[in-house]
Length: 329
Image (cartoon, rainbow, N blue to C red; front, side):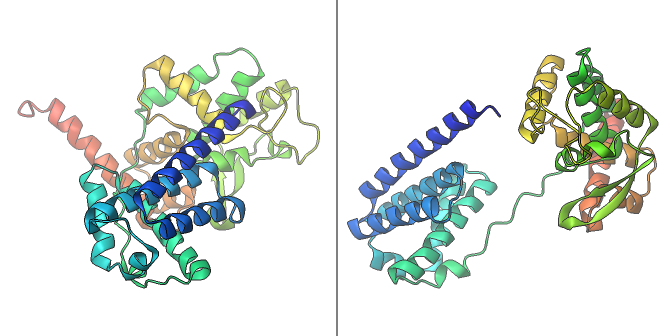
């Protein structure tokens, strides 16, 4: 992401956090509002959390104090916060769900409350064990959203359309995601010395666990072509993938490239770099691949994570059946 864009996004988040802090002062009693202000200053200056996280936490606290004001009939004081019950806190979370907040958002807001209460216990002498007894809402079990085979092919072909080294770079990168099942972070961690890629590649994944991944001939050939054309890269430990300015290619830039590609091809927002990895697994499974082997290729610690793709494939088969069968319409 360009520095200017990053600065704009950070400044916007900080302004939003300041607005929410002011709103807290209007909804809470002075002692509670002051404590909330000290907490936000703490996570910004001492914890050094991102501006986006600060904004989310400030917004969550604002909603919490707004809820308490209506729930209790008066602004909450510090003494009030120490006396809240599990039912009170659950009531706030339930109100957010009724308002249409996604489970991920509600989980973030509960995380903000827990961090706030830890701060209160440590710095303000206000302790309430009820916050620890509130269970985190269960996350939605979302299935992977792979691309159709034709769409994956079109994306990779389109990535290589620019007849220069950047097109070769993008095509090599996306081939690694779709043809080898790499995560974007794993592909961008490759070094200059790794190319031209060999028949197998040692990939360091989550938990620093190393797995061996076979590399298709087309990926090996493309990596060699790209390396020859790339104007950067001298030392073995240099990154394999560079931006136009000679800096290491960032995940954000890869995502922006994918966004432009899917827009041009009319594909949905779910067509992301990670969707190519999902497509790798789903298409292997559809072709008769062994689930355990796919687990090893993906670097999943648990087979349950890989089994999600069986559900994806089953849903796909049912849709095909419903469309093709004479009685399906």
